Amino acid sequence: MEVFNLTPSDSSTFILTGIPGLEPAHLWISIPFSMFYIIGLLGNFIVLFVVWKEQTLHKPMYLLLCMLALTDISMCTSVMPKALCIFWFNLKGITVGGCLTQMFFLHTVSTMQSAVLVTMAFDRYVAICNPLRYATIFTSVEIAKLGLVGLTRAVLIILPLPLLLSRQPFCASHIIPHTYCEHMAVVKMSCGDITINRTYGLVMAFVIIGLDLTLIALSYGLIIRAILRISCKKAHQKALNTCTAHMCVMLTSYTPFLFSSLTHRFSQGFSPHVHIILANLYLLVPPMLNPIIYGVKTKELRDKVFKYA
Image (cartoon, rainbow, N blue to C red; front, side, top):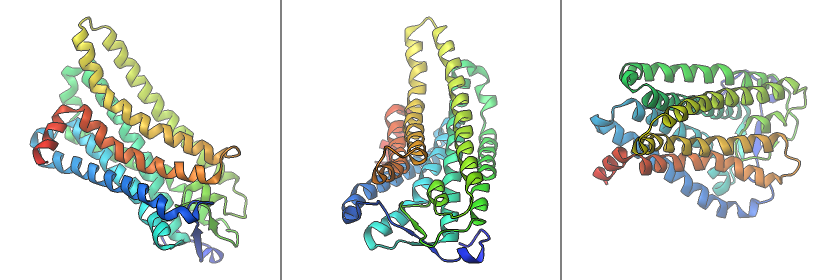
């Protein structure tokens, strides 16, 4: 996995310690973590299978849901197998190239997921505010194009992170107090000037999330304005119901991400093990809850899932 060029002094391995201060409890901690991981994989694979099998679900909304499921699966799978190896077998070593590769995939998929959530918000806006043009605006081809744009954006924005780090000299200890190679955790291992790395990481995180949240807020502002113009209360309820699942998914995705990012950069008031646990839950809880949220709130999908149960 030596994808990135490394300086000769950086050719050894990093040591991922797991959850600092809670090493004796690693086995117990792994039980809920592995359960969340398995439930998340199962739920998202069920969504992918049902949408693939059912021709009636080959609609933009469900294609976007499949894209969200793929990002959920990729995000938790990029870190959990290694974390469970630490918890179960005490296998803490990871090559520097492997660490940078894991970091690249993790942050790329996270950025891609944010783009999918923006697209889903735009999908709901068109469906409610301009329903007559929905079928022409959101086609399978357009969904594929939007997905490709989101992936390209994610790769171009995240690629400088490992490239900049690959040029840094790392300290002799190479010990990362984490379960996976998160960007700031790896940056702190460097003995060189990390000003550019820290600044780029911080600006990148807040520009992406700030831009995406602004677009989502704008979409929902227009949706709320359109709903308030509807005089029929039943139509009000129906319009709101179409957005509830997406709003719940946004809360489960963005809230822990922002909290985890802030605690990592401004962590004076937080114990290290609290931050590490939250950082892992950020990668486990949304993938576990998203299929459940959409299964509960979307009758058409729920009925098709029960068909195969």
